[in-house]
Length: 218
Image (tube, rainbow, N blue to C red; front, side, top):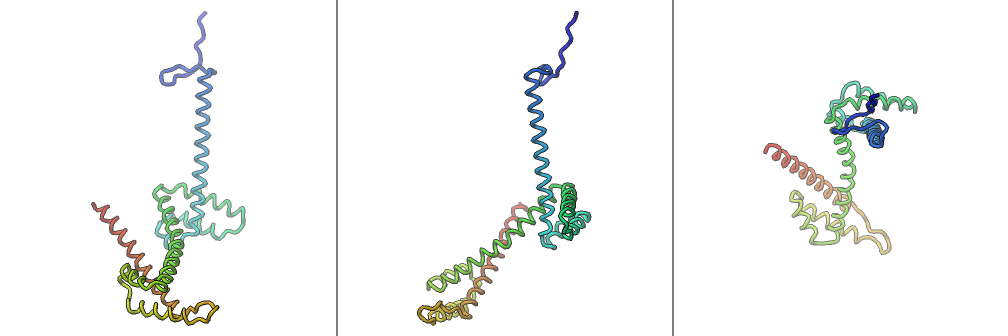
């Protein structure tokens, strides 16, 4: 009596019998791969939904530049109006569903816009700290004014020198044991420094953009 052929399948030319140790190992690997894939998809879905919710914090003009689909734009407006917890949860899921339909390049543009907006306040804070440091240096060091004018040639040197001189006088006019006076010159000096730092920062951004454009043309 002929033997029944074993049930199984071939993997890279090798026969794998059903129920064998190799079969069990292959099925375990396959199951693990499916579970990993589902986990990755769930994580990506949550990330895209959170990205959609973050769009509510994006400035109107920046959101308009993204040219999002009308349906998504309306869904975001509704999400912003809903205060009920369950209603907001459902609307967030709907926004996430619409976000997943966007092409990858649009999702990347959304991430870039949010990152740029987030960097804005940090840059402004850093500029304020730098302005404060320069003011302290100008008031404490006679050579600092020359260094400032050298790095910021657009400065009105005569005006800056007069502000520094007056701010020092105000500082010295305080009574012993009292905090130094912070007169008009002290505040105006800070304002002039901040203005120049802002202009200098804009020039840096313009230089970077020009360099990038030259590279692209090349």
